[in-house]
Length: 123
Image 1 (cartoon, rainbow, N blue to C red):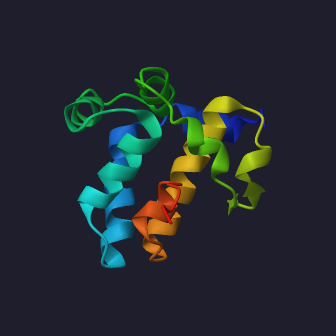
Image 2: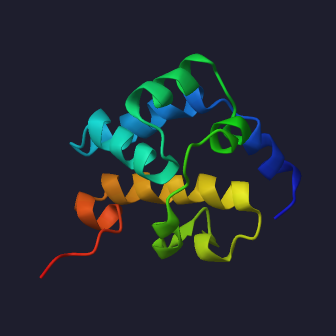
Image 3: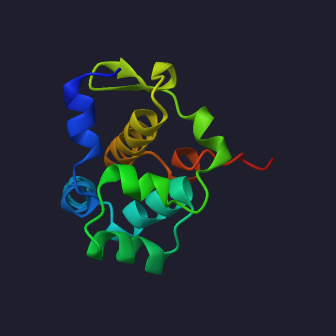
């Protein structure tokens, strides 16, 4: 996936896309807190770190490069975003961006947080 559009996406400011994630969730009666929880789960940022990334106007490339700990369970995220299966994306940065897109989509579709965050259900 090394086309020009993917590179344009890498240079997009995370702080410009973040409100769109929140709006998408809120239109479906989900919350900004849930969006933040998803982002922090995927990236390892805490709330202050996430806020700092937004305020510094870092692009997606920097946002993911500086992420404290990309979650090891992200490989459990499966699905299609923009017509592409996320688990088949070879470019790691693009895959992380699409993982985040898919998680926000799941939130907007009403999926339970423990399922979104790929947590094993204790029996």
